[in-house]
Length: 426
Image 1: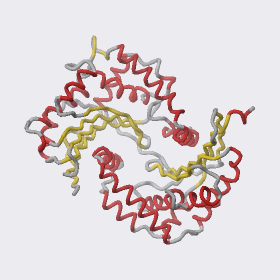
Image 2 (image 1 turned 135 degrees about the vertical axis):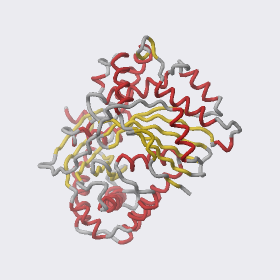
Image 3 (image 1 turned 90 degrees about the vertical axis):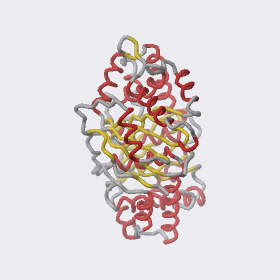
Image 4 (image 1 turned 60 degrees about the horizontal axis):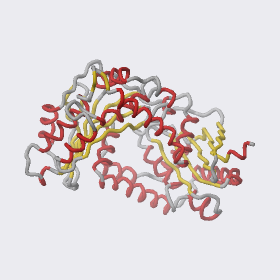
């Protein structure tokens, strides 16, 4: 049984969300700072999440942090950056054994104290971040950004988005841009982080066998938030009708082509038709029962993989496929053919039910992980939408054939991106 508390305001722009469940043997506390996704700060935000875990005021090395966490029965702590629509999220978390397995009544309090120190009392020298930590993590961030090319499937997917949304903030990667890294200093990064602490909307998600009031009291006592002039982050614009299809070819030393098609769906996630869009995408390319898989891969043997995926906040549909270079035109034609079939309503009731079942299984699987559960509810929160898991499943199960067809009417091809072998360009 999962119970979500109503959002508890613990500061002017700080909200606590307690997801109570006895399913896990651990308790998770996630702290999310919301920032606009923009060139001016994206790279710095990514770097912050790499520098802070290197040391705190009383635990100046990562080794000392690990030793301290080990003493809390193997607790884990970390930070990350992620992109949700045109927002960049800086996330800090600590995961501890469930209090009922620990005799120490102040166990959770000790964990929150360490997390608070990670966030609010980082290791500094002369009032700025440790220069060597910043230098090392700048190099690591460069490697991360350059390493995107190692996963060709994900790289091609992200490059399609970058080309598709070239004039929009959504084109920015969650790690920022490699060209901005060298300009960052320990002082500029520290100053920016102080701005983040003062001006970001903050949400805290607590997942586990927890009492909402007890967690609220602990966080209010142990955390040292000091906000002023909190920013408001503009909602993404999704109404976009492509004037023409943008065709992009990129060349790399590869043996298998990566074809990605980007579509504008123009259906806001708060609209009930969004659930029909999810079903539409799943019927089209959601798995082995989907139309694209059955036609392009099974019947025609023209691809190694093929999928369709929805970008919730930006209302995009992306189709990705791995193909032989010479099959480009044929695969493109078959995809467009299946889009037309969907538009005409040429899909079976069995396909609708299979898609609904697949989506339901995926959504329910979120309850298998405290991190996935926290992320699900946080995603609802930043979209000002409070739909729990069972309610979302019910909305999906209620989707009609007519709604699926209507959702498909909004879908327009924007960009065709093909990652192909560099020898073809010679």
